[in-house]
Image 1 (spheres, rainbow, N blue to C red):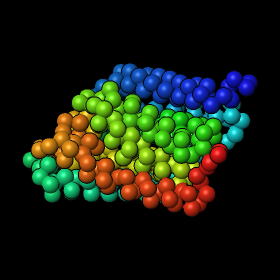
Image 2: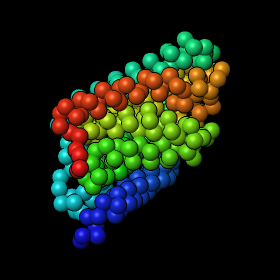
Image 3: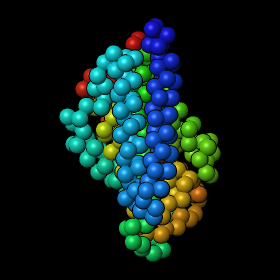
Image 4: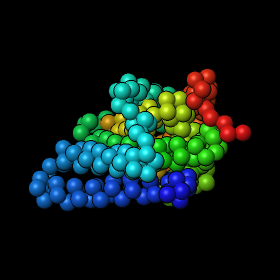
Length: 277
């Protein structure tokens, strides 16, 4: 049993359980809904994504109860609505401010507007990434590493890993992985440390992805997205983010780092930052 409680073992095993449950549910629901409701489109996709998220959360909660012998307080529903809403509004504000600065610098231009129905695939992708990636990056890696190393090393480790995992995205580079680690990894990690729950980082993450791709029509971590507007990024990549998207822009970095710092200061003042030395 001691082997199961070793931090690295728990990280690997918990992540494996969540990923396996999520992937199995996603493919099974896709096949079933495709057979029962061919051509259903967005409703079927949304139902499949919701089911995948629910099963992933349930597998995480059950594994924590069985292996760690505790109730997963990081999934407490008591503050979920308020923290999700705060995250959604905060994520939208951060992205909108960044796009505004890129536009003012001449790196973003709207070509035409589109129907909101065009954004359905982006919404489904944002739900999946927002919920499941936060379970893995913050609920598994950051939480367990914090128990073993303390808050600061765990935050740095989880942020670097989060950036590294984006290295395999289209148009990625060492620079894009570094800025993802800094602006998103630190920001989302700070949101978790501030509340000790997953709802605030989930809200920020899904809103970030949907606002960036679904509203402003910009690439999300290198993936092209059909948004409410068709937009063009131009000029130096440091300004616009280039083919990877605005997340690689120095403006998004400049907007997100202060937000992360403010949340970390608030987390420290609340006594939520742990030090083992």
